[in-house]
Image (tube, rainbow, N blue to C red):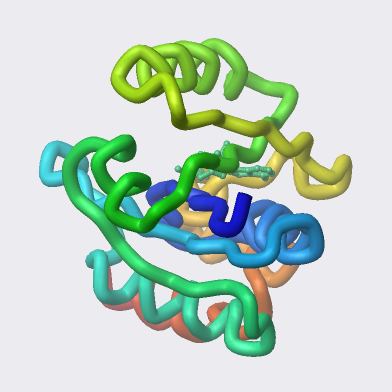
Length: 160
Ligand code: ADP
């Protein structure tokens, strides 16, 4: 098990995501954090911006790489020679959807395993949507996003 893929929208990356990346980097030899570029979704940040923010956040992790992908996760995992997908799990609402995705992906590729890492308690309420909502109405997001991207997010929201 060399490479694990941690996929998501990361619109934007939050302290919850960063915590999962930090812990994953200590468990797996290599982590690829990959931004899902889904043409059916309308993210606030472009794919390039989401990648750029993640790169700022993981710059001190030699075994973490940032990438992006389109299409099926199983195809992407094969391309990256990975047999493991990592997902973060929050207590509110993640389970049903993630369970469905994990089973679907195993149907598509029985070799591919999905592993779940439970959120750290103090980050369990954080989502990208919460960050956008708070920032949009002028609230303080310093507890929600990594310091490296704080200004990036503020600037973008002001310009929306
Ligand atoms: P969201 O928009 O809900 O924040 P993403 O698609 O960006 O979700 O999330 C990518 C992955 O990170 C998913 O596996 C999601 O469950 C996980 N995740 C999101 N927020 C947290 C958090 N606060 N703690 C742990 N895992 C999280």
